[in-house]
Image (tube, rainbow, N blue to C red; front, side, top):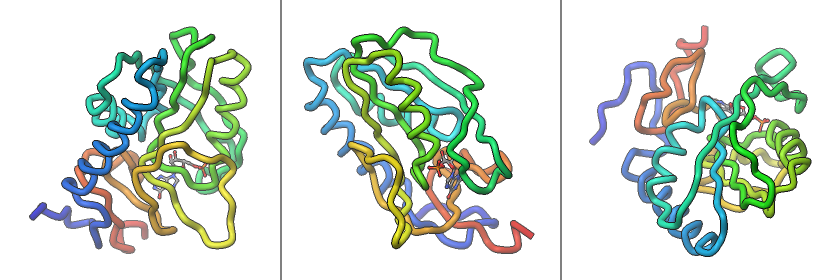
Length: 182
Ligand code: 5GP
């Protein structure tokens, strides 16, 4: 039994559940990219925890790199227009790129990023997301190839995901108590 942080109302995915989901995805990626030239690209900062676990569950050779983006807009809604704050250090031309993302909500951020990366002519470009937020009646702007799990339309924290830069270090994914926001 995990100790629940006092600000957390409910744990959605436990550490044990997360570890087995990530291993499952890692195994699939290992098979799919066995004879490819794999580069994992994590989007900072939320995806670092997933990246750390995922890369260790992939058995084929790989390289890693990082990007940081900042969204224009009011900060609560995704505008789909992002600014690259930190670009890749690596040339991805002719390489098999897999973007590693913490959570896919509207998908607009990744859609923009993928368009940008496609201009660099990778051999392939796919997405692995830890969470995919289901919102009824709404299509996501992109289709991820790998998904650890779907997640309800709630604001979630933990396992890399923050609220005001806090809670990224929680080993599980949870929902905050309403009084934490007010
Ligand atoms: P999208 O462009 O897909 O709407 O936005 C994706 C980004 O919004 C994620 O990478 C993440 O930074 C942020 N985000 C979306 N939903 C949540 C959530 O429930 N919790 C947290 N902490 N961040 C979220």
